[in-house]
Length: 88
Image (tube, rainbow, N blue to C red):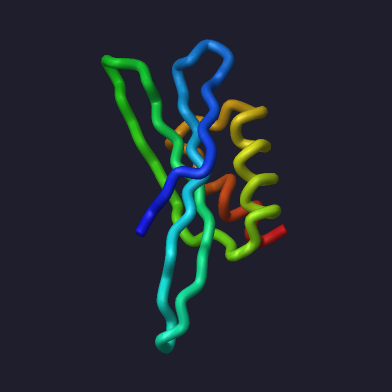
């Protein structure tokens, strides 16, 4: 199950950021996790990238989401930014 908790567009509306809540099950225990989806809204070159289950901590996920939207990260760099965030 995935649910969009929050969305935000870039200043020029060419990119949409989504904070995603997912439910995962590990050893019969269900937990909520959070991730980010980035969608390029430019019609000629539409791209979408997402990384789910980055963290079970909503506050950390919101920090990542806000940082990506503030810096206007593109879909192609989502993986690198998320890896840096997790390893920090």
